[in-house]
Amino acid sequence: MGPRSGGPTVTDPIFLSPPDIGELEESYLLRAIRAGRFDPDGPELSAFEREVAARVGAGHALGLASGTAALHMALLAVGAGPDTVVVVPTLTFAATANAVTYTGAEPVFVDCDAATGNLDVDLLADLLGRLAEAGRQVAAVVTVDLNGRCVDYDRLLPLCAATGVPVVEDAAQALGSTYRGRGAGTFGRVGIYSFSHNKVMTTSAGGMLVSDDAALIARARHLATQAREPVPHYEHRDIGYNYRLSTLLAALGRAQLGRLDAMIARRRALRDRYERLFATVPGTRILGAGDSGSNCWLTSVVVEPERTGWAPAQLAEHLAGRGVESRPMWKPMHRQPVYADRQVALTGVADQLFATSLSLPSGSALTDDQVDRVFAAIAEFLDGRR
Ligand SMILES: *Cc1c(COP(=O)(O)O)cnc(C)c1O
Image (cartoon, rainbow, N blue to C red; front, side):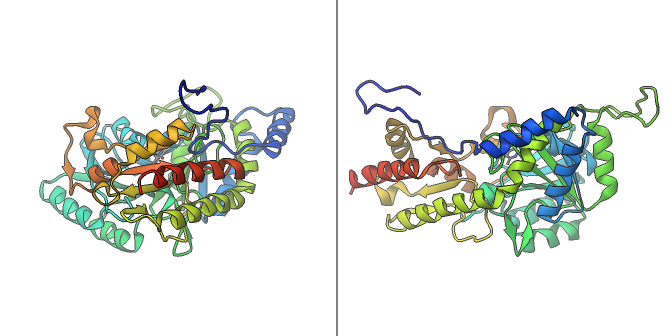
């Protein structure tokens, strides 16, 4: 992004969630390169898997090339495939639905609740009943812990247990979050994380599968390693995938994991500051506010234009003019051309949140000076509309 003609000179663009990488990561990566092991059986990857499992409180972990690959493996592991359906929240990143499609299963989209943007549990109960009546085999319910806030698992888990449907927890955004003291990613039969470049911690690209079920993880490990049978020659009984996380990137992940709490604390401080600011602006609120367990991955403000007299797109435009990135909430999956004809259970809340919310710079790598610039730009916008 260069200087804009007519506007103020922008020398230092401020991004939504830039990677927080420094000398520690450099030293870990260099050490891994010098150790000379580049295969997935090297010690860095298994150490990273053990450390993530210990951090979140899961029995076993499997390092994979991306969060999307982890979702794909998780869904195959619970039996998603042709002639099954998988319930997916409509307010999510496309990877959640795409991974379902990779397996041959059909995604069915369900709406969310207004306070958190997370899957609407009452609507899910209704939908599971209707799918059962229609004789559909539901392979899984995928939950997405949006912006780092966990789904209401006290209500969701008994419902899924009663209907015998396994839960796959897409905790791509929620590594380090907790719900009633328990780690995000550990609530379903299997959970996944993403270490993509804009997530709470990153390996530039990467993901992980976690589960207490050792056999499930062993099966996923087999499939993700080209499904090579343990014999000297190349023997295959399944279609495999080349999905393992690079051992070098695992080293990067170990450095990041050691800083996870500090990075979350920084995101939380930013969230608190946004909450204090928007508490003074009638007609605005922070999505999923008031959750002490969230890792505060992204902070999104929800705006009621009838009350504020301005729309989130106007704030976004003002911020862009000051070199500050912001972004609307995910466009719901049922609105995506590629998923337009799918079965849905809707209340209109996801559409409403898509139209009225804006995610603001939330990254732990933002300097104090950059944060001050973001708040100055927002204050300038608000002053201009009072
Ligand atoms: C980031 C993300 C993914 C995909 O993770 P990648 O590592 O980019 O493949 C999946 N689901 C959600 C909810 C995400 O935010």
